[in-house]
Length: 552
Image (cartoon, rainbow, N blue to C red; front, side, top):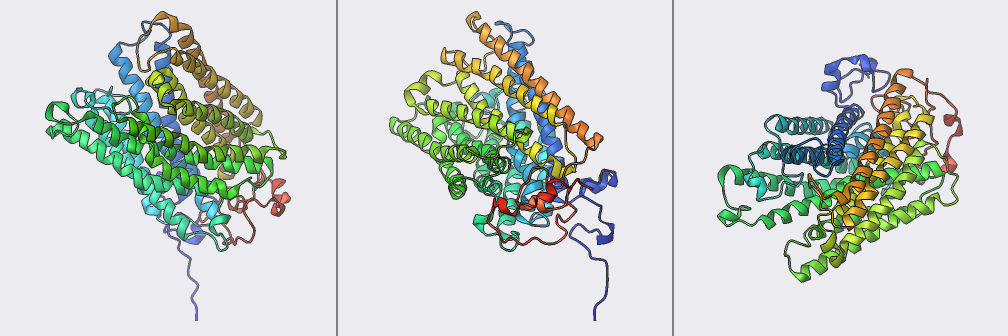
């Protein structure tokens, strides 16, 4: 004998009371604040990291405007130090590291796996609130006097300055726990919640990238947490670990910091690789060339990244043999990265390419990342690095890899999955124009920095000799162009939510599981639990009707 009762899901809502889709803007503040739905949590991350990106970009614009004049145009030297530190801290810790895993990863990964949610939904919500707490603490540090150590918090200066170093250190510590919990959640979800029939080699490459990233988050982030905790103890209790006046070693801090922070480079960039792998396949309408090579290269990068931290310290006085080893490993880690780049190009080659806005952002990424990767090889050469170390050449390389590549991949992913997430489509013409403006602005900003860095212009300086003025001014013009492109992108994306132009059920013709879910996805993602019977990226299974059916 059976009894018919309302089915209750893990979110505590009766089945009859479920909203039509996960967005349901009118459901009230507490419905969002206490949600366990991975898509809502991802959307809250998306809003939060976008605000952090705009704040970090504003600080960058202020830095560039100050550097228009050789003697500085806006701030004192001390104020300038605080502004560029805020730019780095907001961009690295509050935007870049959580941007793709927290937002697009949270929304898309369970859909790609055919799961109803992540494995640990309450931990997922806690991860978001830890990120939010860390962001608030970082903002509070500004109110409490600011901080001027640079985003690396190098000792001994960070031990002596009277700035709010402990507060920003606590912010980074809390943000680290958010990153660890997100990584742990994704690992468990990938192992336990794959749809029937989805073997490891039927998983989309975005899932592979997030899985490799999660391993790095869980294994490497505790090192950063311990390091900033030791800096706080050193400032408060003078225990003599990094303070040379007490017998400590400042270079030891560099080893600790970069042992985390070089794997963190791949925590930032591996999810971007995953997005690009998805988009080159969908928008070229071809299976990915070298699927298994791309999947294994993500794991190879995750492993090798633990062994190359010393290439940040070629001028720190480490032994010659250590420098040789780190230089070799720097070149070696380029191999799995190059495998990805060549595989993407081979996928695009002779494909049926749709030059829509997500694909344009993807092609821009391929160019920007190639420049960033090749200049990284230059910096891996010992004799060249001695000359270029701590110059604007490093600044330009860092931004091509970290900000240019990751931000472009993030923008590409947002444009690609926007119709699936919201059921609406943005103005495609404006999207293409914005992509072109952003590409031009970014290169106008940082190509001059390569040139002046190769001529010896040191980074982080608030003033400079007049011979570098044309390069700084060109770079400032580039930032203004870049800001115009980003403002246009924000405008048409937000406008699409109000204009409500309906997207197609499968806007781009994808064949991974997220495109089989209703648009936008309901609370538990799928009307019927999916079963995987085909190989991944098999476009012979594409239902063309869904590409012509508007969202209801």
